[in-house]
Length: 134
Image 1 (tube, helix red, strand yellow):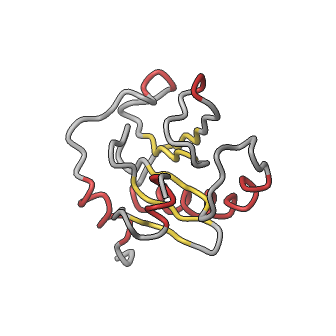
Image 2 (tube, rainbow, N blue to C red):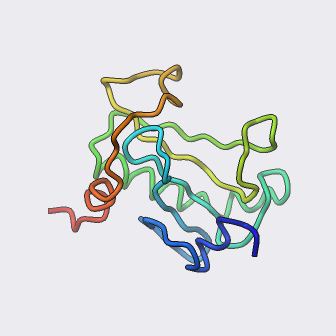
């Protein structure tokens, strides 16, 4: 398997998984733009949105659930959803994936979306998201 995300789904590569169902897996991005930046992917390999459009429908419930989880657990003020199909659009891993990027009032707007915050502690963020909610 050459696909990085297929290897994550198979458990061959560790990830900070925050959600899983029969169709999708969600895990923290290892190089996040903002606190809580998460990828939602289908369990099955699909190159991109155009390859099998029904794959997006299959992962839609996961996108919705993870969006709510991130907003609630991280006290985010907003959230961006981003998908890229093809090299020209910026796709780097050719397995369908959606970026869910929690946003915060101190860095609003689209201009700040892809400006990476420095010093994000992924372990702390993971614990905050996966805590029992107390």
